Amino acid sequence: MNATIVAEIKEKLKEIETRHNVRVLYACESGSRAWGFPSTDSDYDVRFIYALPGNDYLSIDDIKDTIDIPVNEVLDINGWDIRKSLRLFARSNAAVYEWIQSPIVYGKNGDFLTRLTGLMSEYFSPRDGMHHYLGVARNAFSTLTGDEIKLKKYFYCLRSLLAAMWINEKQHVPPMEFAILRTLVTDSNWHNEIDRLLQLKAGSNESTLIKPHQLLNEFITANIAICETQAASAQKKETEKETLNKLFRELIHEV
Image (cartoon, rainbow, N blue to C red; front, side, top):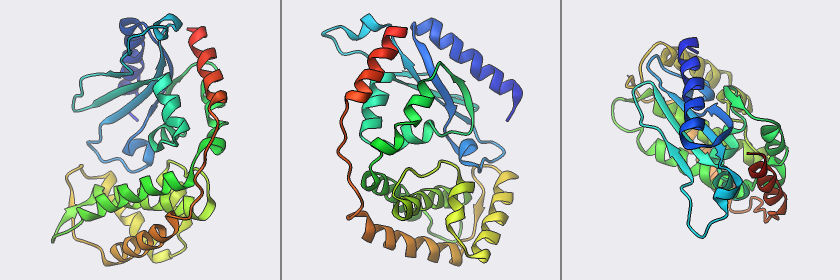
């Protein structure tokens, strides 16, 4: 992590609070840097959850529930309102569950993060999670065709597939980090190849091409099929929302 850029990110978050009259409850890295396989030119994917002043929610008008900052070649900064975030959390939205597990945190306010992570097991739906990650894995795998393919697409596909496999095996929230997800695999040849590709990716750019790898392709094909078979019978949670409503009310009253 570049200390100068991290300082710039934190300064921009302060500017956002002032300009938009919000309180940033939590901010983190959400992309390849947090997943554990950045390239030399990977940007910083900053995501944050914020709260408006309480009275702003007491209106017959809909309120804008995102803050989008113009993207440049280094920074991609985007935020979600707390009400939007908690609604998606209740629906087992994978992005929210990943954000609150990020190993790279740019800021947190009070005990919001602790309280939300403490609710993950109660609200996470294995079936919804498996379908999400399988969809991402299938889409990424569909691009891995031809004589040369983008290296980063292999990791996008593998991380999502491993997340689906994690849910299938353990029936709870998958970790965000690729290094933890890969512990599911026991094949030493597979790990040797992954180590080689991680080293290659760390020293190359986002456009780097490699030749298709038979071992990885067979692994992906076989495990997508297994997870697809199991996804239909995975647990589908129907949860109450009052706990999240209470958290929401407390947070907006603190603004």
